[in-house]
Amino acid sequence: MNFPVPLTAECVLTGSAGDLAAARRFTRLALLAWTAGAAIDDALLVVTELAANALRHGCGDPVLRLSVDGADVRIEVFDDNPAPPVRRPAGPDGGWGLPLVDRLSSVRGTARHGRGKVVWCVLPAAAAELAG
Image (spheres, rainbow, N blue to C red):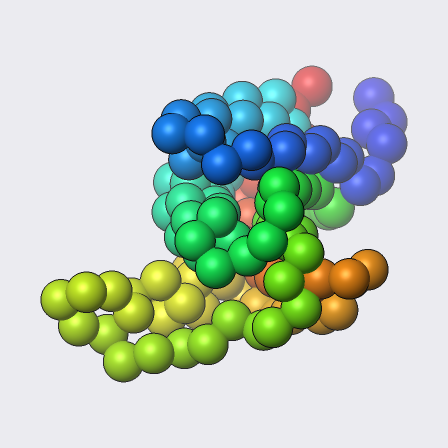
């Protein structure tokens, strides 16, 4: 069976109290539908960190985009703040998120997008087969 590649889905985060839980649920359901369960735990951690940063430091309603292309899971979070994320020293009040994302992903980056930016990363899912 042939699958359209890449598979892509988006979720708008509105700043409501349940946004992070909704983003994690969206991620779990999309990856369960697309893969054999590969990278879900890592993806949930990464989505939580990137979405929380966009909600805390970004502007507008951030958008979470997931895609699977071959054996990679790409996670992108768009917001309307053009300033790139700033890595700060880890301590009791935070600073652990970007190092965690870096550790779990094979590559991470930031790019200008419209009037804001996108923060993205790629998680290897080498053992994954597209679900069918």
